[in-house]
Image (tube, rainbow, N blue to C red; front, side, top):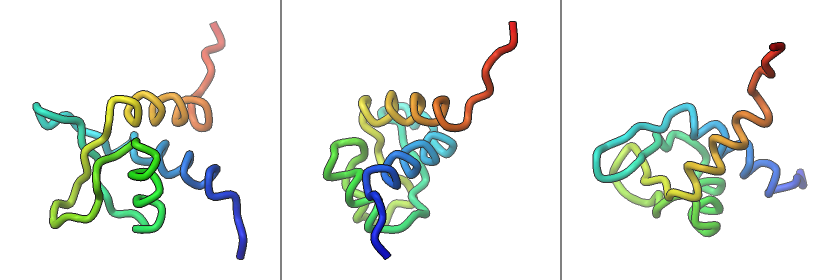
Length: 81
């Protein structure tokens, strides 16, 4: 099946925002997702190289900023105030 890989990458990055945590020296996210998608996020500069034994991956500053923005855009609840 063909699909819009950029849209899938946006969703993957938004979902990574849910699992991000501050490790002191870097923000990381759990990487229990499809390797193909993680590789594309790495190629785009949003996460570090996912090919390691670690269960999490480093998220770049741009990746963290965009992940939060995308999560809020697609899943946020607008205030009624």
